[in-house]
Length: 267
Image (tube, rainbow, N blue to C red; front, side, top):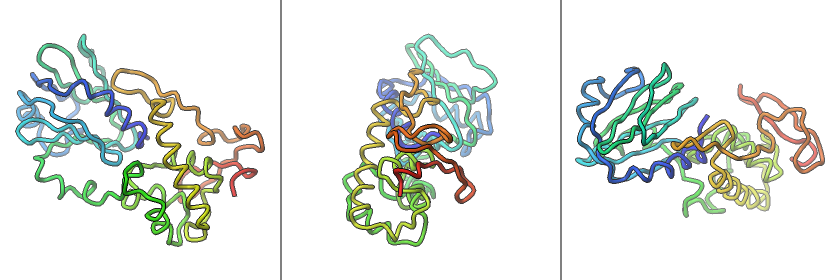
């Protein structure tokens, strides 16, 4: 599932689109568009130019001229591809945006991911965006803010992935962060000491920034088809040695979701 590092990576790879103007749009999988019928969607986008590309949580916001915003909400899976030579669509192609002076942007493999189109003024009323918690890479995500968030009787992994409290972290990156912090996913958030919360805060920043710098997890690729280069420490590595060399990664289930940790170095 694309999470904050992957969405931020694809955002950065789309920055060269700023200033480009859309020539036409092909909607090949209408179900991917949640706000407009295909003909209306294509008509609104035609002639609009890209003004800004932002990320909010796991959503990508492409601001266009005339006050329109294209919102891509990443869920189970989804990829964007930009090609200066043009896209050859296949059955996984949902939408192709053709730009003037050449170049196509393809939205593909949108497993539960959605594409929505809104006027800028409507964004504060979009439920997902309106209810997002603090961005963990923002100045508002302080040690004090994290300590306040931790005052709940819930597993720390569940709290890290609660989008209404901390925006952008999913199951994969929560486990990587907890390994870096030396904490087990099932620990009760409220039971963490101040020192542990401070260590967790540092791990959140460090792991997410490192994930972005390396292009995200290895199955993901950005809009220029550059693969992620992150070597995951625990997620999906059950039975393998801990990178710290002091134990073996074990797998469990927590809240119906897979969980991975090292019993030797996570407490």
